[in-house]
Amino acid sequence: MMTSTFNHVLTMNDISKEDLHELLEDALVMKQQVKKGIPHEHLRGKTLGMIFEKASTRTRISFEVGMTQLGGHAIFLSPRDMQLDRGESVEDTARVLSRYVDGIMIRTFSHSMVETFADHSSVPVINGLTDHHHPTQVLADLMTIYEEKKQLDGLTMAFVGDGNNNMTHSLIQGAVLAGMNIQVSSPSGYEPSAKVWNEAEAKAAAQGSGIHFYSNPYKAVTGADVVVTDVWTSMGDEEEAAERLNTFRSYQVNEALMAKAAEGAMFLHCLPAHRGEEVTAEVIDGPQSHVFDEAENRLHAQKALLKNLLA
Image: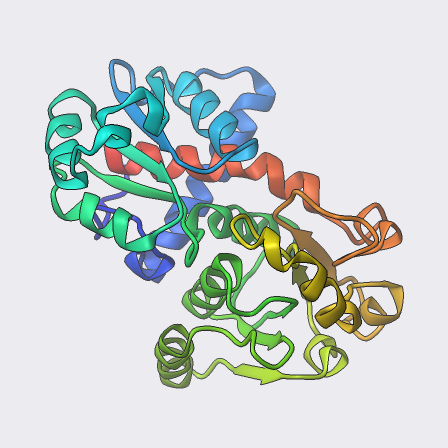
């Protein structure tokens, strides 16, 4: 069993490159065990508390099924089921839940809420999504790339769309962590967080990988081994939907854009997708798309993470 160098996973920066590769290898093993019907109940008797302030399909199901396959148990908790919705502090909630469960996964809006929770928790805390980071999705993305390409080091990933969202920030951190080059293209006003970008730029320079921003999406995608996008309007930004639809129109991932990528390039999307907006049906349902492998790999990448943190 691997020995991790981390206690919580709030961003991709909480994981080392060595941890990342061990997690991905472990995830691939457990994926094959599921296919072959081989039990892998590493967390028998363990319980994961899951706090959801945002709606979820893949996150809830993959964590809940993952804990079951690992021999453990998961408890779904919404704010209305807890005293959080009636004014109990995040600090007190963290202290109390830590006495009951072996780990906590949180899917919420404010990243500072997850940080506060982790500061006051005596058990591992996993960020299942905040407005600024989505590390569990990017673990699955990197697993999908590794599974298909058999490597991560030296590959080039291109992200086209809203640069200032949780997926972009975690993809930037994850790509640099894995030794990949990352190329981002977003409209003016939607650039990635300066803090995330500057930290990643320093890490990339130290290891010899590239990180570049382009306003022109065709330049960002040129030569890329992996092309990634996300919805143009994230949860909580619905009132901006019409404005964003107009702003991002030229950032759609379509066949013309994919033609600029490297031969054999993969297309990824964390889902849910809006066909005809950020991506065309021809791309997401075409031969270059690995979005459903990516969705499946949420289960196995998270199991590797849970096994490492809770076992």
